[in-house]
Image (cartoon, rainbow, N blue to C red; front, side, top):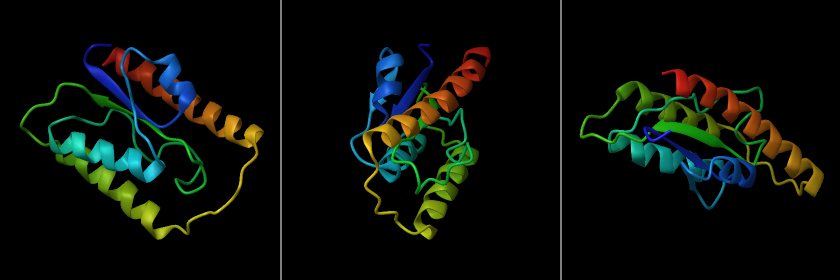
Amino acid sequence: MGNICIISNNPLALAKYAACAISVAGDVAAVFCDARNRIHHGATLINHPLSGSIKPNQSPYKSLVLSANESKLVDFVSLAHIEEALATLAKLPALKQDYSATVHEDFMVIDLDLLDEAMKKAIII
Protein backbone atom coordinates (compact mmCIF):
# COMPACT_ATOMS: atom_id res chain seq x y z
CA MET A 1 0.00 0.00 0.00
CA GLY A 2 3.01 2.27 -0.26
CA ASN A 3 1.76 4.03 -3.40
CA ILE A 4 -1.62 5.11 -1.97
CA CYS A 5 -2.90 7.14 0.93
CA ILE A 6 -6.29 7.56 2.52
CA ILE A 7 -7.57 10.98 3.52
CA SER A 8 -10.35 10.59 6.09
CA ASN A 9 -12.23 12.02 9.03
CA ASN A 10 -13.74 8.59 9.82
CA PRO A 11 -12.29 7.02 12.99
CA LEU A 12 -13.11 3.49 11.77
CA ALA A 13 -11.28 4.04 8.48
CA LEU A 14 -8.31 5.64 10.21
CA ALA A 15 -8.02 2.68 12.58
CA LYS A 16 -8.40 -0.01 9.91
CA TYR A 17 -5.97 1.60 7.47
CA ALA A 18 -3.61 3.20 10.00
CA ALA A 19 -0.54 2.35 7.91
CA CYS A 20 -1.59 4.60 5.04
CA ALA A 21 -4.32 6.85 6.48
CA ILE A 22 -4.06 10.58 7.07
CA SER A 23 -6.48 12.08 9.57
CA VAL A 24 -8.35 15.23 8.63
CA ALA A 25 -9.95 17.22 11.42
CA GLY A 26 -13.31 18.57 10.38
CA ASP A 27 -16.21 17.80 8.11
CA VAL A 28 -16.56 16.42 4.60
CA ALA A 29 -15.59 19.80 3.13
CA ALA A 30 -12.30 19.63 5.05
CA VAL A 31 -11.60 16.16 3.58
CA PHE A 32 -12.38 17.44 0.07
CA CYS A 33 -10.13 20.49 0.56
CA ASP A 34 -7.25 18.39 1.88
CA ALA A 35 -7.59 16.07 -1.12
CA ARG A 36 -7.70 19.05 -3.49
CA ASN A 37 -4.47 20.40 -1.98
CA ARG A 38 -2.79 17.03 -2.49
CA ILE A 39 -4.06 16.86 -6.09
CA HIS A 40 -2.53 20.28 -6.71
CA HIS A 41 0.77 18.69 -5.66
CA GLY A 42 0.40 15.76 -8.04
CA ALA A 43 -1.71 13.16 -6.22
CA THR A 44 -4.43 11.34 -8.18
CA LEU A 45 -7.88 10.34 -6.96
CA ILE A 46 -8.48 6.61 -6.90
CA ASN A 47 -12.13 6.75 -5.81
CA HIS A 48 -14.71 9.36 -6.77
CA PRO A 49 -15.47 11.86 -4.00
CA LEU A 50 -19.23 11.55 -4.60
CA SER A 51 -19.35 7.76 -4.53
CA GLY A 52 -22.25 6.13 -2.73
CA SER A 53 -25.87 7.10 -2.51
CA ILE A 54 -25.54 9.47 0.45
CA LYS A 55 -25.28 13.15 -0.41
CA PRO A 56 -22.10 14.75 0.90
CA ASN A 57 -24.06 17.05 3.21
CA GLN A 58 -25.89 14.14 4.89
CA SER A 59 -22.97 12.15 6.29
CA PRO A 60 -20.36 13.68 8.57
CA TYR A 61 -17.73 11.16 7.38
CA LYS A 62 -15.78 10.79 4.16
CA SER A 63 -12.73 8.82 3.10
CA LEU A 64 -10.85 9.29 -0.16
CA VAL A 65 -8.12 7.15 -1.67
CA LEU A 66 -5.34 9.00 -3.48
CA SER A 67 -2.08 8.02 -5.06
CA ALA A 68 0.72 8.84 -2.67
CA ASN A 69 3.11 9.52 -5.56
CA GLU A 70 3.06 13.27 -5.62
CA SER A 71 4.68 14.75 -8.68
CA LYS A 72 4.80 18.20 -10.15
CA LEU A 73 2.13 17.27 -12.71
CA VAL A 74 -1.50 17.98 -11.85
CA ASP A 75 -4.03 15.31 -12.83
CA PHE A 76 -6.77 17.52 -14.23
CA VAL A 77 -9.37 14.73 -14.18
CA SER A 78 -8.84 14.30 -10.42
CA LEU A 79 -8.92 18.05 -9.98
CA ALA A 80 -12.19 18.32 -11.90
CA HIS A 81 -13.75 15.55 -9.77
CA ILE A 82 -12.78 17.15 -6.46
CA GLU A 83 -13.85 20.62 -7.61
CA GLU A 84 -17.19 19.14 -8.74
CA ALA A 85 -17.60 17.53 -5.32
CA LEU A 86 -16.87 20.80 -3.55
CA ALA A 87 -19.34 22.65 -5.80
CA THR A 88 -22.01 20.00 -5.18
CA LEU A 89 -21.46 20.24 -1.44
CA ALA A 90 -21.72 24.03 -1.58
CA LYS A 91 -25.06 23.83 -3.43
CA LEU A 92 -26.63 21.55 -0.85
CA PRO A 93 -28.16 22.98 2.33
CA ALA A 94 -26.19 22.45 5.49
CA LEU A 95 -27.92 19.87 7.64
CA LYS A 96 -27.81 20.83 11.28
CA GLN A 97 -28.85 17.53 12.74
CA ASP A 98 -27.77 16.16 16.05
CA TYR A 99 -27.26 12.53 15.14
CA SER A 100 -27.29 9.90 17.85
CA ALA A 101 -24.19 7.83 18.49
CA THR A 102 -25.87 4.92 16.70
CA VAL A 103 -26.47 7.00 13.58
CA HIS A 104 -22.86 8.26 13.66
CA GLU A 105 -21.72 4.64 13.84
CA ASP A 106 -23.93 3.78 10.86
CA PHE A 107 -22.43 6.62 8.79
CA MET A 108 -18.91 5.47 9.74
CA VAL A 109 -19.68 1.90 8.68
CA ILE A 110 -21.17 3.04 5.35
CA ASP A 111 -18.11 5.17 4.61
CA LEU A 112 -15.80 2.31 5.61
CA ASP A 113 -17.66 -0.08 3.30
CA LEU A 114 -17.23 2.33 0.37
CA LEU A 115 -13.56 2.72 1.29
CA ASP A 116 -13.04 -1.05 1.44
CA GLU A 117 -14.43 -1.37 -2.09
CA ALA A 118 -12.16 1.44 -3.32
CA MET A 119 -9.15 -0.22 -1.66
CA LYS A 120 -9.87 -3.49 -3.45
CA LYS A 121 -9.65 -1.62 -6.74
CA ALA A 122 -6.61 0.39 -5.64
CA ILE A 123 -4.62 -2.74 -4.86
CA ILE A 124 -5.36 -4.12 -8.33
CA ILE A 125 -4.22 -0.91 -10.05
